[in-house]
View (cartoon, helix red, strand yellow):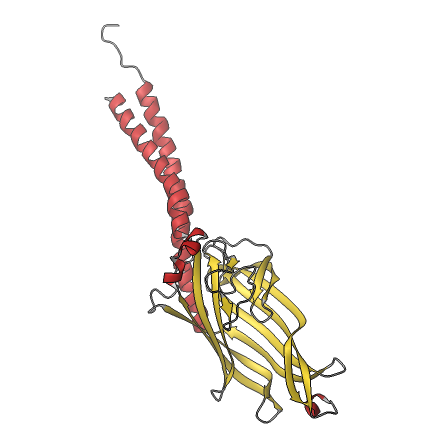
Length: 318
């Protein structure tokens, strides 16, 4: 009888050990990836909202600087699923997202509008120059991690984070762990010092130039902070202070095009936190909790079962 029970326990123990291994090394890698379509539950498109104040905003109509202007920024993102099924994208395990970002002032006037198409590794979030990736319709050289999402299982370290305005990857550093509405997040900070990003022909008088027009260099700086849920790599909150200026012939700033602080709205943060809690909880369950239970229980049953099988039956009359 004991031998039969032992055989059953050995079988159960082996099953649980195999089950734990399958969860950890087969199921989790299949689940812990960026979705091909981030808006599966919202009609195929996700919307993220930010708001803030421009301490200074240049009005091209009046050629004057406005002060303390309320701004709203909205990003729409959808996944190009057919593009992700091409042989090249499948070979590199890529997702392809199309994104549109629009910033408006309090009168509804569009301050800026940009488009971004990124192809990126579904696990590491490393960008690829595949599948029509572009910024504002122009092919550029992508590098670093996706500006829309950090890697799965984000580590507390420095990453190269792609800045679309500069069109290059810039280091962003882990500075600490915080909590947002009960969710553990990693805080990353990035400081971009003044860099020229283009030129703009303007009236000479605007930048203290004696001739009628002047091709003014446009300079850009940014102080960016991102709060990232580490298991999923979801950016649940973002804040940046962006400054763009026009410089004159002497190399000094003459006009502030924009000096604004933009932050993810409270409602958007709460929604992102709830989504990240759900996904990270599921991954933690599959990656740690269930495999650990299966491993411990499997070993216990295996040991007890082997012990029972090894017990020799007593011979009557001996």
